[in-house]
Length: 238
Image 1: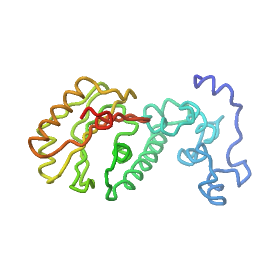
Image 2: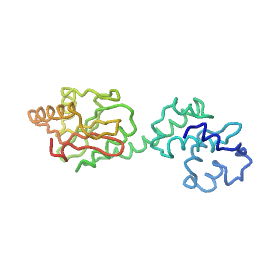
Image 3: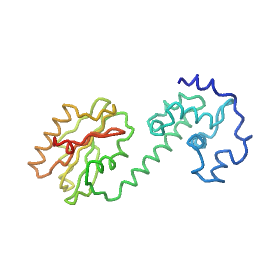
Image 4: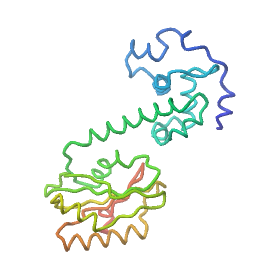
């Protein structure tokens, strides 16, 4: 549905200040706690004000409707994307983007504790804060000790929508510098397609052979998407 159609469905709204105190987002948060607020009400607090015809809650509802009420989709929007919505200027858009980025970093901090990798799902969940919602490809490595506990995760390269470059020399240099015992490769497909490309397969084969020579085994190569993943190890092609 186009935003013009959504706007047409809205009647001029009363100013939030005319609402019952317990229904105003800020007052509601103070009285009932943050969990009592809807997503639209929380966003309304961030943007602060609406338009002459729409309250901040109405504006927030329009934004959420445009992304099918999916906060993950909302997190993918840029400042310019958000500014396309009526009532959202640059400052308000920056506030929303900043709040969503803090949420992403909170997830990242929670995952920063010592993590032992026991299966491909562990890898997927561990790297998710770095790769979730990215509009472009990135290539990461996870370095493990002999107990398969994560020593470090590091970005190797970032590219366009269609691909990124991963240099085996750089990857093994970083692994040797950290005295890692094994390496896991991860890169994302913004398209959502988990199927590895011919280049992905070729790189994995090359990395496996080099790792065997250096006594630095490649334990897995994960093709990451927002909702699923492909594991070379699980598929028996590593």
